[in-house]
Image (cartoon, rainbow, N blue to C red; front, side, top):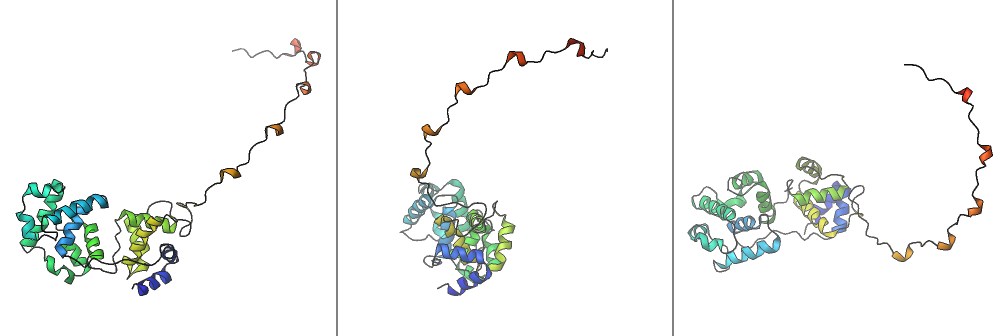
Length: 261
């Protein structure tokens, strides 16, 4: 399915080729079900939460609307206490309200977002309260399936790149973009592999230098034990005694007078 992209990435970057060998077949795919608005609602709900907690809240939210994505009008009409009751924070609720209001007022053409290019779509989405460049990139990658997105601000991407290249420090967003230039026009697939690399824990095969972790366990039976019988004991008889007659006596006449102040 992604053979053309993977062949390009292998040729362009030997380090990434090693990552591909470690991770295995690419299983990246965009989520086609639901609506664009529903995907944005999901993205906001999932912000800064563990996957399990976010999934629970999102499932409860959909249950309010018959287990489907709500429309903008339905989000605006739902009582605050009802939406808060599913586990939404006040802040995220304000984000959802702002998103719904912009859609209802025609400020955000949500149903035709797929017609915009990457930059225009990102520019439109970041106008919504609570949606930044990272959320816009996730929408481009996992909703629209855009092939050349590199989330330079993503911590997982930064850590994956650090591990793949054996870097001593986590790369900056600017360094992520510089490394990713060679991956174009398939940076989405490269990003997917960097994320999956963090799941494998196999560092030795893909990086050298800092961050290398060995998978070998030390066998406690192989530790050499010291034989107490081999320790050399000191023979008290071998200690040399000092002959008091051999001590040199100091001649008081040889002492130099100290300088006077």
